[in-house]
Image (cartoon, rainbow, N blue to C red; front, side):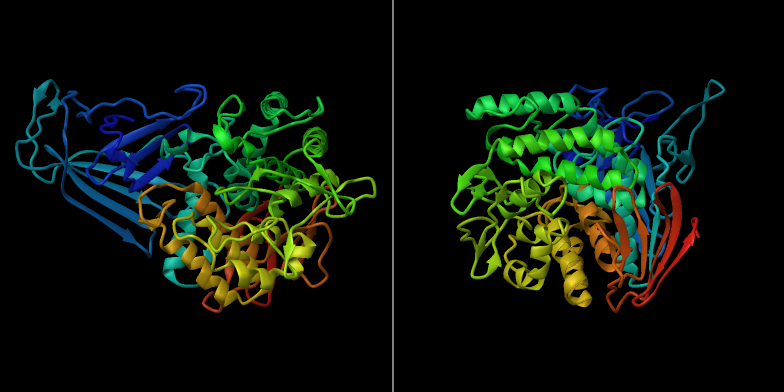
Length: 548
């Protein structure tokens, strides 16, 4: 990257601009300090680690330039999506311009002399003084990736357009389909979570990429498929540790994994078992969209079914329990968590909500006539969305019938210290089953308090960017809530547009736009190898082949 080197690991945590080509992420702090993050293949087997703790140096003579925080300024142009940052290094003024529209992330760096006579780069072997305002170096960063995701154009408030485009570019920059890796919660932008893979990849990032960029979505699936052998050994090691006996065919995907696919989580997080259901859920949708084959997916489904069946405990009434798991909420161990039990049941059923007669039936927790988060639930605050996950993304028919009641019970029970995806889930459910305008308000809440100059933070209070998971979750509301996309097992006769998928799947479109949006235009959505352009308004869906 020419003259750009790491300056200070700690200061770089305050991210203001970030780009990545899937191997290298660049972070720029308020003081003008730079950090590079490398993929595990180049910086250790299981982690992404900061690379080269060195001072920024002049390109022509290697002399160090010490960063200074003075005179920093930033500007985000809502009309163009362009972020401009200016800061001063000793002897240099540096301007970094990140263009956030179009099909590329383009970043231009301009170096100028801070004052006359400060810099003397050699010219034909002879020093030549520069004067204030003279350009030292300028040009587009060569490592910038092409972001070829389908575009999303909203005829609505400028701030919404800018936020959606920032989310889209965040997803595109976070994963490179050519390097054989999935995506971490912070992509390559931070060493937080060590660049490891969690359920975020399948349940929060994958659904948005499935419509916007199938090639990047496929990389998430390939990562799991290529680590099936590790999932076998994970299952046996976990069973031995817990004193359980599992079939030799059982699979267990790790809660936290790196390059090897081995379980890297410590303590009780190894028992956050719902990740196994999420992996199969994404693989199943990938099979419907032609990204993977049944020959690849079926052995995974059989191994995970064997895993779940080995954990079931008989209960009265010919039902079965799934006890002592760490649920989505992550604050306590529970019995019969709704989300985990549903994914287990769906897997055992053969990836269907129709239970065959031979399949054991899991208990689903209820109280006062409604589904609850887990058996015996008594909580007023949850870390993140959990019960509503049964409505979306799982689309469990029984929960969908109670969608509005569940919203009234759980939508206000979120801890403000929790991550931003929760409001996105509630907004998606509300868009589908309630008032789209209320959903819009909820969706805005899910990103407006987390955005830092167009970049997602994991926290309302702290700069913990770039949170790819949050961007993926909020884009799901745009696509699967407002635009009305829905992956089903049958064609919806009331849908404005439908197309058959593979393995008996259907993609139906039934928009639920908020009144502040006149239309959504999606260009370059790829479905089964063919690209489409969608012009979506409140009462009409017009579909053209190609990029439109």
